[in-house]
Image 1 (tube, helix red, strand yellow):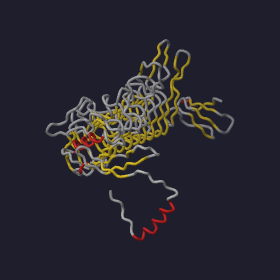
Image 2 (cartoon, rainbow, N blue to C red; image 1 turned 60 degrees about the vertical axis):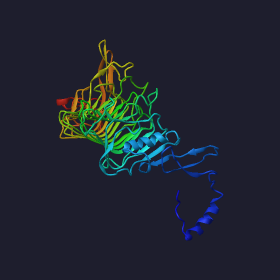
Image 3 (cartoon, rainbow, N blue to C red; image 1 turned 120 degrees about the vertical axis):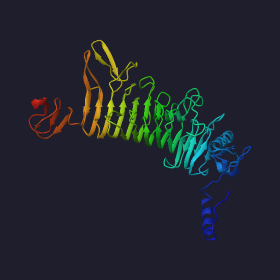
Length: 474
């Protein structure tokens, strides 16, 4: 290991500072540099030392440069060889630096899943080079695995369309965040991260998903990732999150998707909250463009999620965000949602379920009880340009054509005896009944059902009769 050279002029400053600091600092008693060498390995130095007074030597991350590694093969074979060789001799985990391996290549071969191992390392970080890596099989990330590129405009994983093509394991995903075989009996693979790269499905029919998260839970995330050309299969989803076994994952941030049928799908197979609770850390930052044969752009069939800073481009026959079409989806929050050309930017479904206990208040008509999938939904800031409806609420029969809706909050059904009198709801849309406040007497046209609170004058509360105008209530 080489240390920086200290000039003669700085030595005089260095010595007294060391003397002064001697009473403040305690150096490790057995710190040294050791070059990790396996049966056929050459790697960067790793620092070992006694930590906390322990008599046992403890390891930091082992760092290995694949360009210096003696094993031959393509980039994925070399990464795999490093992970396989060090997973028993690097208790602190291993960083595999492949950034110097054919950087900038327009089509770099990758013949295997880099994490195809007999036993998984305690933790691993793989640094990919710039350029396009042509993958021929699904990549399966185990727990505590981080995959990091040099940015979605520089590092691209593309499905191989050449000789041999792509061999799918049945999942239909380019990258799987954990699998049932490597995540243990509890099906929990924490700490999986995919960052700073792009995925190109090349419209191959075997590819259903760019990223499939069935088992990555706590401390797992996807950040700064672009996904495109996932259209070859009936399902063509950028990121699919299965909340039954991928709860508490995320956040999913800074995403860009184009030429896909669906950008994000969040679903839970069974069971209402709160036992167990299926939720994510949210989708925060997504620019989504779907093909004309796809949609919805985002399918939200799970509770307790937040969608923030979303912009969607599609056609008037498509939904932007569809909530509760397939499964129970209460307690969701949407912030700053924009769209262009969509039929329904945000669609609240009136589909029903038979989940017991119910996740939303049952709607009762006589002796028949029905539970809708959607309730307690908050929308803050929705803007739709060139489309039909900004918000389509099938539960109350409300279709808002307002270009901008500041607030739309839908609660639960309001029961009365054996029937429901409607939903609790608040909106700032001028086309729907809402509660207004002012200091003067209301006048002019109004929407039937609107309520106005006057802060001055003799009368306090007015109600709108529709064509009859405002009338004093109290």
